[in-house]
Amino acid sequence: MKKFLAIVLTMAMVLALGVSAFADNVIELKLADNGADNMPNVIAARKFAELAEEYTNGTVKVEVFSNGVLGDEASVADQLQLGTLDMARISCSGMAPSCQALKVTSMPYLFTSDQAKYDAFDGAFGQALTEEVLKDTGIVNLCYFFATARSFYTVDKPITCVADMAGLKIRSQEDPIVMAMFEALGAKATPMNYSEVYSALETKIVDGAENDMTSYLTSGHYEVAPYYSLDKHTALGSLFCMSGAAWDKLSAEQQEAVMKAAYEASLYERELLETSEAESRAAVEEGGAQMIEVDIAEFQTACQAVYDKYPEFADYLALID
Image 1 (tube, helix red, strand yellow):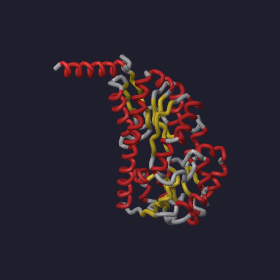
Image 2: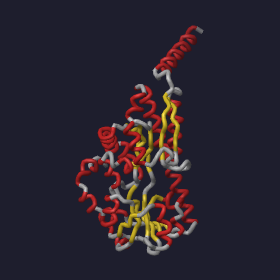
Image 3: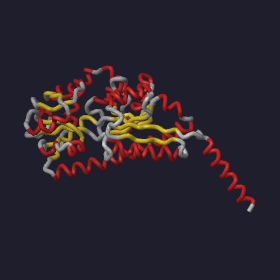
């Protein structure tokens, strides 16, 4: 009996120490995401909020604001740096104007597989970028979230090899690296607002566009551009980050708990992405879209000119196994 009581008392002391390790006051944080509520990144952000509260014994509460209600990515980036917003999931390209190193994530055909991408961002490559973000902006990156790979899709002429790209007018983002990729592949980059793309495809103002499988479905682009070539040229990452001001409010124990919650949420998002991509592919194929396998190595070789154009990224690229 005495031994049992001793064990109970010891456990009680351990639990008491665990609770006292966290601050007495509850810290409330706002997290911004421009995605819709049903997107994997937003679902995973809400998972993070649950885990953060659990792992900090209720002393850190996170409210997720989706659908861009707290501002577009440029505004969110500014708010994080000013400390007027606590947290955000923001694309690397959205933060790149404030941290030039992040532009490397737009380089074409960076990774040979999803797992290679995860390994790189979880490893030295991702850590180097995280350090640059902190140095340039004061923002603390907790981990990385992702989107599924982007590929080309066309209206009339399926892309089966690099030669098929010659002369095609493809809707492009206004990103110099992306536009350089189009040029290297022989296509004509045609920047336009995303909201105009469906009509441009339907009326053949452009010959094609590019995006991930889920966006291909939700935009309805598969209805007017049914040839989807699985070249997987880019798969952009996002920062899942916190302003320096918000980070400094946390105790060391809370910081550790929040980091743990963020990484577990990122793993959960990867599972959601895989399911979402498979479901989206099945839906567009049922709607008449054709999936076209290509020799990705051929496209990679054609884009060597893009890498030659950006030698400043060489040190970061060397960190990718």
